[in-house]
Image (tube, chains in turn red, orange, green):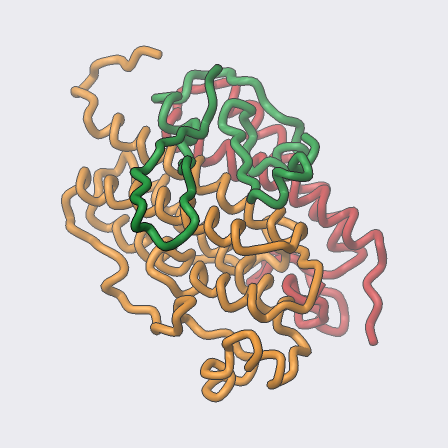
Length: 86
Length: 189
Length: 76
């Protein structure tokens, strides 16, 4: 049986939290396109999610398909765990 | 196009192996007001709505697929390793005889998903009012499932999903206001 | 006091076979009251927001079943 390290859950939750702020701001900005403060906040977290994604992927493999993440060798996209398995 | 990300929107947990709760939850997987209906409804309405609200329909429709994956995860976890006897005792004998422990797009009563659950009238106001109603109905469904569930971890995830319905309804209401607005007239807050 | 839950009392007939529920409660969530969202509403931190299901505090309206409510609901 494969074990998933505690760090996986911690780093994942950090990313989920920042990504959730981005989802909320995205929907807000869809109906409030002129809110400069919200746009600044959006761009701030967009930058933060980049570094969180990079850190997570360096330990647990690619998060996204089709060239939006780099691959290790051998090809590690298909490595478990998948989101519903954790 | 769409890009998949190998993570859930929210950390889903369930406390026990409980196929009975999975039977109720499947309402939000393949039911009329479920997440599949929601995603397909909004993404389909995009093609015949004013440009000002296409982004919103695209983004909420996309988020609904993340919710569909959360529901799938809950059902998967609640039924993973459940024996045929446990499935039968949970009222999932009919499901099991056709699907084993596979997920399928049907509602809690076993009725398969149908496109007639979703509407596309081509009238922006009619469609957005449909969307607002869909969000309120999904919110209510989450309430009834929470009432049926004694699993605190599951309810934590269901509360998240119910809260999202509130925010989506809010945005669709704002979309109506945007389309009502007279050209060039400034909104006041 | 303002609440996001309202109630009504259905008629109780002497011929109703089930034990009457004297008061029925229904949800009236924040989106019914806020109107077009004003700018700069108070926010949760990212981790709080994820747990709450919304970034903005005024939209937070958690739902608990009677069993959970008996235990006081979850701490916020």
